Length: 493
Image (cartoon, rainbow, N blue to C red):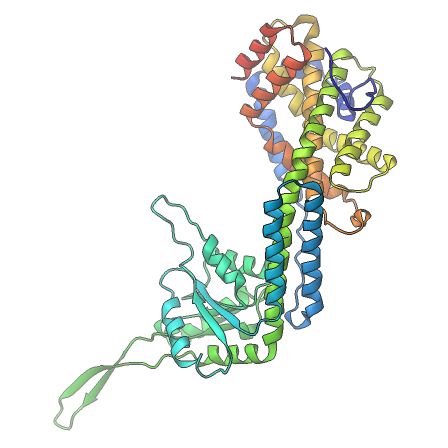
């Protein structure tokens, strides 16, 4: 078997294959497990992984009053930096040109005077009525140029039962101030949207509409419940009760002759608490609102550019991973005994880390790369990934005549599979790193890498993927044995 490689190869397996050597000391009865027992083990392993403590995502502590023009300019500069990287690494000039145009648009918006107000919420909560009231009785009095827009109803499924809120949330996130309207205590869906708005650093007011439909004593209870539930994401003053379209009141009048007249008297909308709050916000925070919205747009643009850049880098990384997975497979297949060359194995692993770090422009020394490789191997062993993958592959091949090559085939496939998992985990990890002027600014997080390892392993445990992968590796290891390749396919299928 011949392989065309770009750099000298050290004979041995990858570091992950060392784990196979360690695994060989486990009770031989493991290899005799039936297919159902193996998949049960995988299921239990999946539960174990899911129950591992997940790292908490760091939420940006965003104080609107502290937003300055320099904050926005820095965010725009960061977006431009990613586009500069993309221009160096990518070929598609059209994509880069469009991103440059968006940078110019965002920069221009820094100086805009017009503010934007959006109204969002579920179906039949009173969005349209509130918009009309504000347009007729408030906009003409505030003395500011302000656009007012209503989004489509949230939480509404189409005929196919799907809910697409992309456009509505886009309008909401692009507004300087958002009025989120509800007509009672919060539902789980409404609560989730509020959390998303907070995470996106959106300035919003929660409007409890139709308070007139509750008894006076109940209105205060509902309002307090909403304020208590949103205490962590909203100030008390930003949870406001209104009645945009109150029901008519029945009036009775008794006459001197004992008769009674009865009629319905129209009620006056009660939105003064909301308009007063809006007046305060627009007066005190007008400039900060513009800067905050522009900052969000700059951050979103940076994310868009980084997604394109990550796609380019991933396309360059996958052939690197494939190269090392075949090295791993060949080494383990050729030497399926417990005396693997641990030094050579570690060197190959470290080289893969260095190559992938190079693609993502992360500075790693050889010593650091060896540490990362060792961390991946140790994590795989502790999480039981080696046993689960090897048992599964053994189950796929066990009932076929592979005689003396059985150990080599199983270890070769396992080594290739685990090397691929390690490489994909590194890709996922590197994709999250900041694009900075100095590639050495990003501190390496062992815990975050372990989280990525768990996630990638779960994603690559699908039967269809394993079927294709086993066939591919067997074809590489034993190109002159079509019977074994067919056997592998039949067993997986």
